[in-house]
Amino acid sequence: MTNHFIDKTAITLPTSHHFYSLSQKLTAYQGVDIFSFVDDNELLTGLTRKQAIKRYDSLLKSNPMPQACVLIVMTDEPKPRLLLTRRSNHLSSHAREVSLVGGKRDEADQSSADVALREAFEEVGLDGTDCEILGYLPMQISKKGLLVRPVVACIGVDMVDKLIPSEDEIARLFWLPFEVLLNEPVDYVFDGQSPNDSKLHTPAWVYDCDDDGTPEVVWGLTGRILASLLQIGFGVNWRWYYRLG
Image (cartoon, rainbow, N blue to C red; front, side, top):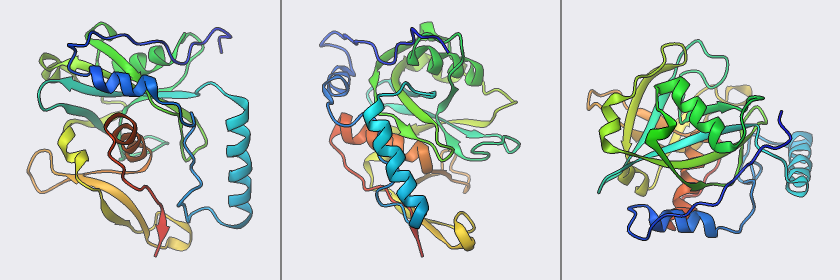
């Protein structure tokens, strides 16, 4: 990978911009740059937990570059919406899960924004020239151990109906009203997602975007990333956990 990779760049928006306050809060954030994946996680026990804590401490000290990036796309309108996708069934990673657009960093990528925008174009046809970067969130660690940098951006509302999901990667594309995230996520229960097929409890936003009785479930890495957006950008704190029971 290039030695000149730029993780985060300075963002300057006019005070009249709809997302000026959000961008300022993202820029002003001075907390840890990698969120912990150990706290409130009952899936990690014994030696596995000790190893995870050791790796996390090592990451905090080494200031690594992201290995993957996702794009949080918000519409620039009075009641913003968020772009989300449900991944195709055949994918080897996060199949059938609700996700943000994004993916792994390539050799040719020059910055985190480049990674996120390239992936957004490949997955839903979003051109970088139609997107405005607002800022960056702390990195998250995926369940496969990748460091993921969320890049926050906005688009004009006229772009909503122009995006087309890639059939190779995306089963469907949908728009989540931002106000849904202001409601406390439910305690969602999954069967067979944990050791010994125990039931896994975790926060999730459940939203029926088509009002057809088949809701989308926003949880996991995507949920944690959106929870950090709420915490840093809007002062809304939802506790994130993985519990067995």
